[in-house]
Image (cartoon, rainbow, N blue to C red; front, side, top):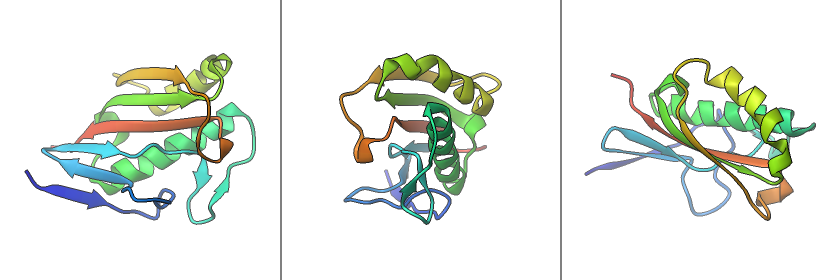
Length: 128
């Protein structure tokens, strides 16, 4: 079982002792992605939809750097600061997963890094 570390400038770099993603046994496991703009270390301005869009763009960047696509994502976990934002987040989420969406969990959490409104992690299979 070999493990490969994924690094890309298409998503924010790790700010601690973790990797943007790891690949093992044909699966890509991403770290949680928050709405940081890659290369700037600044949080995208705006509401939950703006933050969800940036977090999902970051997930996409990591998954693609690993050699997969959003169409190959099989599971996501969405961490929300406020579950009242679920419906508006879901509208944006649906733009990224238009067909055969992955399994998903969504939970409200007490606090997220940098006090953002959302964090999203994903598991994808590598492309055939």
